[in-house]
Length: 135
Image 1 (cartoon, rainbow, N blue to C red):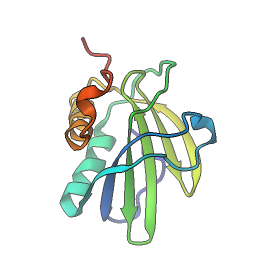
Image 2 (cartoon, rainbow, N blue to C red; image 1 turned 90 degrees about the horizontal axis):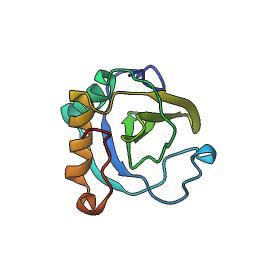
Image 3 (cartoon, rainbow, N blue to C red; image 1 turned 180 degrees about the horizontal axis):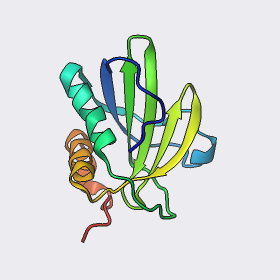
Image 4 (tube, rainbow, N blue to C red; image 1 turned 60 degrees about the vertical axis):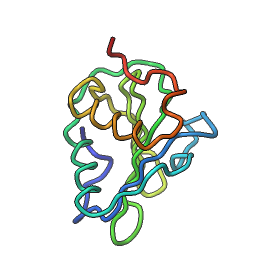
């Protein structure tokens, strides 16, 4: 998957976010919701690596993101991506603006590993609707 920006240098921290609040995503300038977990160093780099390993896929229509990743560098937030694992759409943000929707394969090994990381960090994951289109 193409990231919303070219990442300059190393990602210092990555936040796993549960998307909440205003669902009118067309107006977002940042992802609304609480940080479930923050990781640093090699763990942060590995999370961003999962995102870049996501194969591209066709986009569907629902776009109801449940989780997001926010990457931080030395100067602050580098980018954010809100993922809908049902319709395989991801919405990117950089510099306080949306960079657009992109399709990804949520059922790929990287997609399932990323979803697993979000669910493991989310104490409410058991009560949430299934996020993948996989049977």
